[in-house]
Image (cartoon, rainbow, N blue to C red; front, side):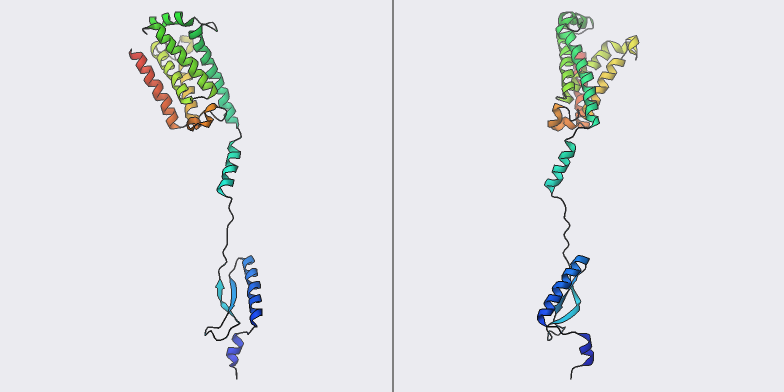
Length: 241
């Protein structure tokens, strides 16, 4: 006679029904995020086809994340668009850069009401720069090329260094003795040009610039250090001669 207690604890199922039940229960549990119960023999292995509710199989849950390529493409799509800050930087660069290039053209070519290289050289000689014409050429080229570089966002740290060096020289030899304000012949104008050039080098010229394709196009502390360091060194060398 079958043990009533033993008979009440387990349910005998045909093997095919057990497999179907386990498959269906596994699907239901997977949808609900639980383990799937499977049909196995009893603890002694002598009763196949018995549904044992004590054993569960974990469901492997896979979290679908976008691939690295998809993330990179999305990021590039966002950064490829220009922003208001890019246009603002372009406005600053064009304004200061083209004005500085025009200022250098006055010295080099005598246009825009300038005196030209020969007369400018005499003025440099009177300030103690010898030979005056050579230093006028250096100063004019620094303003002209540095201004164009800043305007186009090309080699921005070097362009900024050229403008900073010229402004330091101007403050040391001409405007520094007259105080701060331009109305008194002071350093106001020179400080503004030097600070703007240094700030553009530090921030970067923006996406509307040639330098966007190069590593230094995003700006940073190294770029600012190059601009200030080279400009200061160039100014110190010219002042010591």
